[in-house]
Length: 287
Image (cartoon, rainbow, N blue to C red; front, side, top):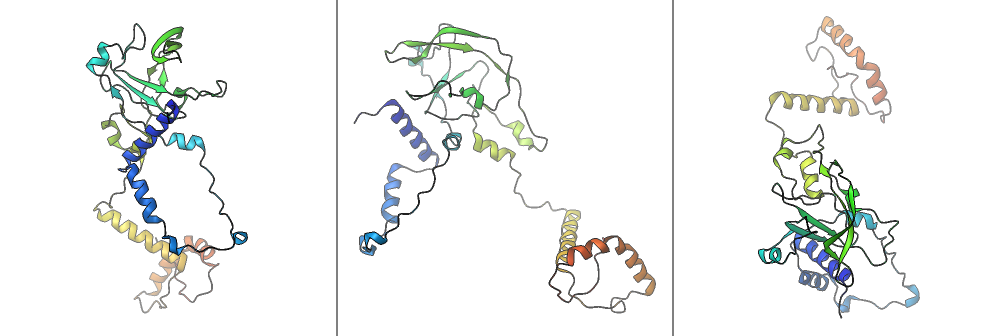
C-alpha cells in the first residue's frame, strides 16, 4: 500500500519518539507478547455479563502537538548545494532544513549555530485544513521577535512545491530576535548554554530548581532543625510533663520565659485547640 505524505510524516514522527526513548518497533511487539496472558488463563463468561471498559479520553491534540520534540536540522550536502536545493528564492539561501509533521507545535525553532547561518522550518498542513482557523507557526515561537521589515507578496519559494511540482508563491516576512527573556530566579548556567537547538524539555531542566543536597553550613543546619522543632511543638505539643524545679529555673527565670512567650501564646492556643485533647504540657515554644 502506498502511503501518503501525511502518513509518511506521521511514521517519521513516531520513529523519532522511539529513537529518543531508545526503543525500536520490535520492542513494541516484544512487549505486547510478554504482557499478554496465556490463552489458557482467559475464561469465557456469558456475553450478556461482559461490560466493556470505558476508554480513556484522548488527550487534547494541542497538548500532544506541544509535546513534539523536533529532530536536528538536516544540513545541506555539497551536492545538494550545487543542485540549488538550499535556495529559498533567487536571493535567499539556507544551510539546513527541518520538515515538521502536520499539527506540530514548535516553541523553540532551531536556528543557525554560526552568524549568517539559517535553518528552514517547513510545516506540513493537511489537504482539508481551514485557512481561517489555521494559526501561523511563528505564533508559538517563544523567542522575542521584532523589527519587522515588512513583507513581499508573490515571492516564489523553491522549498515549497504544489501538486505539479512547481514552486509556490508565498509572502516573505523578515524579523529579528530582540533578546532572551529570563526570570529573576534563573540559574546562572542558562547563560552558558546555546539556544541554537533546544526544546521545551531542555528548557524545563534549565529553569527547574536544582535538587542538590543542603550546603554544609552550620548556621543553615541549626536553623532547619530549630524550625522543624518549632513546627513539631506547634502541631503536636510537648508530651514531656515537667515542673520548673526539674529544669532548674527559678521564679525570675520563669517570669522572663512567660513574658517572652506571651506574644505567641494566643496564636499557639488557636493552633492547638482543635487537637483531640491529648495530655501534654502547657509549655509554649520560645523563639
